Length: 226
Image 1 (cartoon, rainbow, N blue to C red):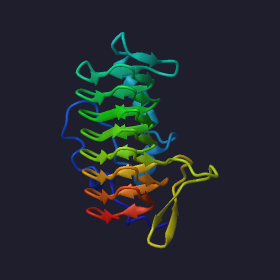
Image 2: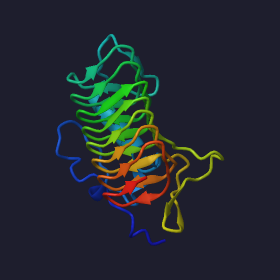
Image 3: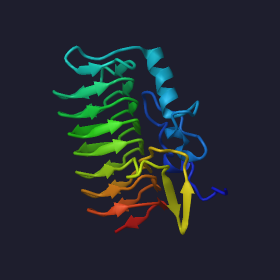
Image 4: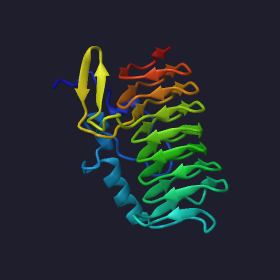
């Protein structure tokens, strides 16, 4: 199948390596392969290798579950009270984890990224300065540098029937080979409050999603979805 229309990781996240801290390798093809748990350089295997090398590191007053792997929290991360972190997980320098956040296994929270009040992150990457700041669900997704989720935005990662996630481009349905696939959100995207992204959404850089919408498929850079 010709997938030449798909954006590459460098097109979606061109400035991902301009910051300090650990940054995942994203240059896989197709671009959603980063979310494949069987992929050698997928999120799961990259994070496992990294946290085993870094080891366990977190403040004694943080609630942590390391049953399935280490939790590494950089000393410069800002941690508000009553957060819960399940390993394996990485939280980078100057990341902000706000009160009531739930950070589940295989979360990679990069430099100055924000996980906000009552937000839940699972098997996902928040690239530097990405924000999920208020009542967000982020599952099996990548949020680009300086992208922002408005309050109540949800990145749905599982079909109702539990089947393979397909994404859409024009009139085509493209199989991804993944049962769980939320969204790939390009750099500097802005998502309005209470928007819901169906499984398999890809937003190019600097897209704007208006509030209260349900979004499907692949959208080019600088798009306005209303």
